[in-house]
Length: 126
Image 1 (cartoon, rainbow, N blue to C red):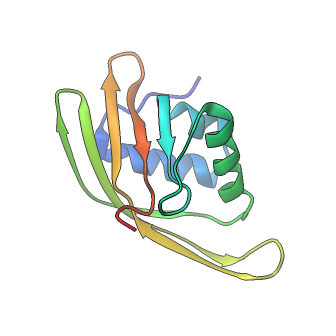
Image 2: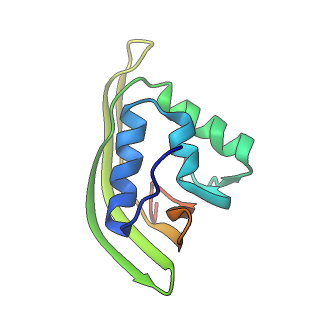
């Protein structure tokens, strides 16, 4: 059982910790039912299998993610989290990887599960 995220400003940091630990189940636990994940600008996916596959693609780069939270806003159990992130290094095939973005993530909170993503949009407005 993964620990619920009790503070919205920790949600993106929990994502980075679980990503860097290659904990796919832990990443999935950060998603609310019906989550929409946007692994590439303008290309949202939903459904557990599609979200899991998209996250596996990022984990398959076998590189760490860095995450810096810019700001969070919340009202009545709904939140917006904005964070800068990057994944850089040499990919498994020897190619240079340089991914980066600024998130615009919508989160929901409940007492049992803490903060979780409703919309995980890592490329923000892109």
